[in-house]
Amino acid sequence: MTLPSFRLDGKVALVTGGSKGIGRAIALGFAAAGADVVVASRKAEACETVAAEARALGRRALGVGCHVGDWAQCDGLVARTVQELGGLDVLVNNTFDRSIPTAEAAEAIASRISLGRIASPAEAVGTALFLASELSSYMTGALLALDGGAG
Image 1 (cartoon, rainbow, N blue to C red):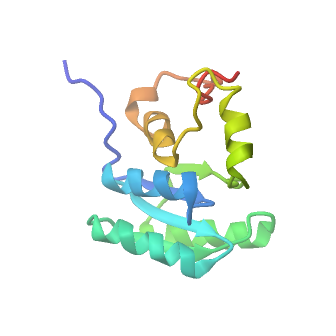
Image 2: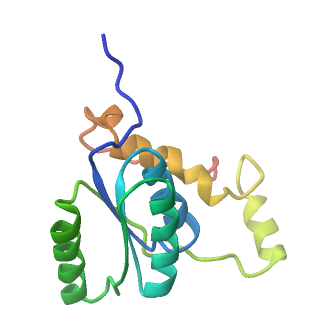
């Protein structure tokens, strides 16, 4: 029996909001797992920086400026992905990745979480890899609470 893995070899992943935080961590995690990646957000230069990091891992990668609230820009993003990377297998719609403004706010939020702390962006990568990989092939829909027990 061959066990499925977290590998994403041969897949193309598009990560919106991919220039920082959770999106950046997921884009680089997917690249490390073998996927070619498209990093998209409103700031093209920041996207290209992350794409360069993915290329340094030996993957093909594009950094593309795109405002996902504009359907024409989204159409162009998908068209460019397919044209330059040959397809699109995984979409991570990470469009609202916000920083916590103060240490006091972070402490207040952490106090409501069973684990007593706020997750790092890297802690979202495993769940994203699971959902993008063949390990989740039998899932047809589920709500996964990645909330440290806050739910």
